[in-house]
Image (cartoon, rainbow, N blue to C red; front, top):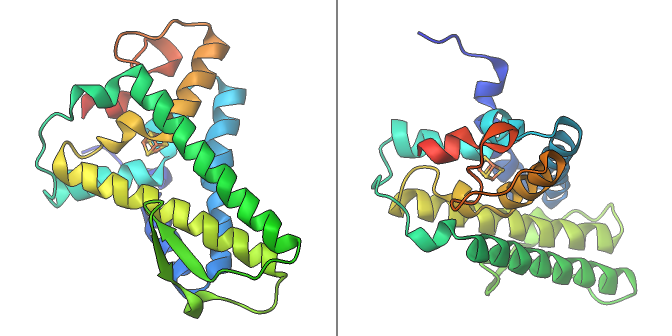
Length: 210
Ligand code: SF4
């Protein structure tokens, strides 16, 4: 049996992050690690090591789908793999991220703090219990907005895990698309018809096998 390494347990970090954000919204800031680490690894390593080895979310979806058999385990629709869809979704995601930053700036400039979480970019959920008063309102506003982004992507990941294969989210995950683009630029490799499954360093082994 293959020996477990420390990074095989990073899925626990994903669960812990969501629980901490439920208790105290400031923990949402920790999610910046999930944003910056993959980019640093790809820029300096020129590979997809984060997706293939260190991503707690990918691991968690794999565990839920394979070990707990929560996935229907059928191939995802072909359009999810298409370049136009993956980069379109990345653009949409980054636009929403920009709106979140704009809301943070408005609170910094004096607008009232909105103690809500926006789910799936549509539904405003009250989230007052997780607020703390010790920090400047804009710091809390960023945390509310960012936790909404993380929760939304987690829900999409779980829904696509249930509907298709365990790691179908990885096919169109904005972070995966972004690191794939950086990796291909660094390695000057042309993407294949299947987008992120190009040969060499930019190969995402987990995604292609599932
Ligand atoms: S594609 Fe996204 S969810 Fe999947 S392993 Fe990469 S960063 Fe994690």
